[in-house]
Image 1: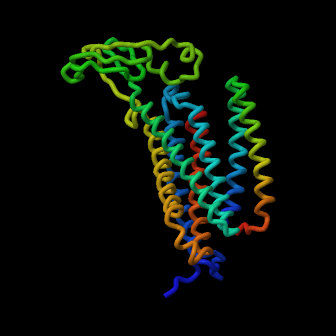
Image 2: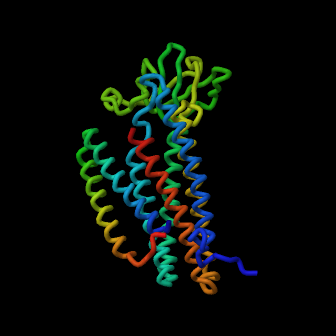
Image 3: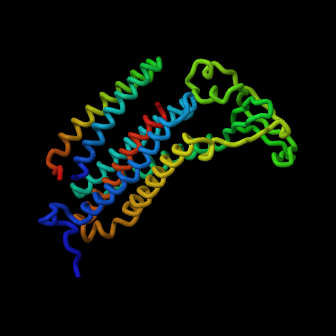
Length: 267
Length: 61
């Protein structure tokens, strides 16, 4: 039995089935990301004065990632256009570019996550805060037993609020050095992972969910790139429609990043 | 809505982002970043016009 409306449009919807399906799916995605963006707004406006972070993320890396996704949107469109004019070789080239751009994006995102996970804030018994990237822990370091030392590349501040705005002149001019802290002096210690504060929680949630979408889209595009030849030979029109549908998903994911970048990196 | 129409929305928002980044950079005192973002914004507009001409025979639906 042949599946209807895989190529021709349905008279009542004016769309072929897969396009209707992807738009219904994208509508649910808008609600998912919309809810999380709303959560971001509420967390931000509800934050105590001076306690919402600024300048914690690397704008250069965020900009590079924005460029990568913008280029991948163009290569996705060009791959579809190549299918439209029945040029499978160009389709392969453009979608290979899309896959490489997506993997580079994920590589940079992983580097940013790693940077946050090795960044520690240590509350000391004297009320000050040691903050910086982990250099080393002594072999006998055990926070529970209060043995050993930990060394960070960073600084010590009197007030936690000094760590919040890294674009402030005082933070910009602060001298970073190696700081060694004994376990006996540590009251509490934690990295800049999702549990650190509400900013890192929403940052990891939003960007993590977005990265999962990038990964999913990359797998689908790779599948069409690697195994699409068979359908291309038998039913190129239907294959072209599949490329359009995957392109719509990819554009949606890129569009989400266009909102994420200024909200998280620039504000 | 076809990929062409969605791409047009994407290009429009990318243009807005570029000029928004330029404003942010100028406000932060980074003239080089701001100028680069303005150039990027103009480039995106030029690309948008080129893309529309290239795909003028493809439907928006």
